Length: 487
Image 1: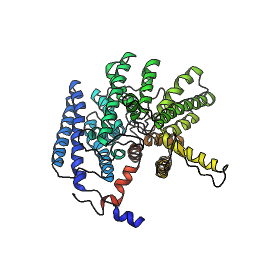
Image 2: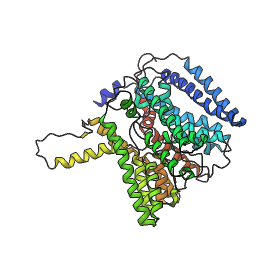
Image 3: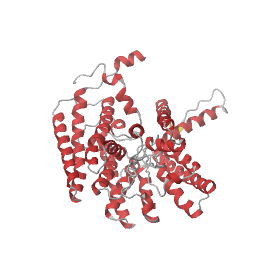
Image 4: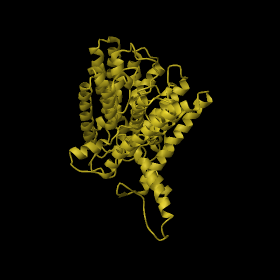
């Protein structure tokens, strides 16, 4: 069997990768026009010049590669390679205009990766005095990173049939009736745009100024968490905080859920299961964090009732907004938030983590194992979730990804401990990066050693593409072997 699989596998075709990489560069150039216009509006000419150089370079590179001839059909490994390459290439390119705000290359690259992966960790000590175009660019990167700017490009340039699971950076659910990737991308873009528009209108209605409303909405809908204010959620009063958290919750629900309910008028059991799971998990985490705040730290009840739900929903949706410094939390609260951040939101949403759906699959398997101990030997029963029998490949994929996430966290945590950082704080920071959350206990700052900054960057990239795309990129069989005709 293994020998047959080896003989059937097809390596990526360089013509396909180069051509569509060029087209994605053109998409990135178009997306970069937005922060260029913003920098011009704000009158920050040096930054505008940097964006102009980036746009010109992307346009030239993209136009040249787009002229290559390549077949329309794209293999699954080619799609994943394209995604991985663009998630490496984009932060490198965007570091140049970020450096115009006074950051060194390492910190600018960190900021760009954090933005594109919708993490929200930052090495900046304060945002006071930061250029407005810098604040806008971070939130804008999170907005198109949240949906996956590759999905935006799919809606315009790639033919249907490309593997959505690779390029959309979301799970292509088995019960999804979308006929092709381009259709899927357009549906997701419609939903995402509507959520963004409603988010801005709602933010204005609760008293948030236009610039902050725009940036908080970009960061909330994408579950990114880059706030234009040092205080994050603490900048606003209760109604504004609740509205922003509701936007984060909306982004952590499968985007297909909205389209199916409003456009197709149909209910899908797995969508409602994930919706209930996110809400219930957030409420459970709220109770656990609140109990820890009260019992361990002796925090007054008004503060417990205020901060616990905000932090819990922010962690579970992987948004990363905070109503108080996480470094001031007790150890129990931090441990609860660590688990919440690692699990994350719904599959098919903008949230990070290994996803609640996979945790539910693992739980259903454990339940089945326990149930079988009570049944006769001849009884036939299989794992089910949301009324549907789970296939073996779904179970294997879910369990494998959970194991990979835990392994990445463990391997990333060790260097922090070896270099003398407090173990719990180190675990919190690593899980926040791998889950693309952005909550921080304060370890992520300009003085953090470059090695550890690099580890957090790797964690953010691994977590955003759920590890597998990077394994495909590094797998020798992806690059060496038989190639299909039409190279």
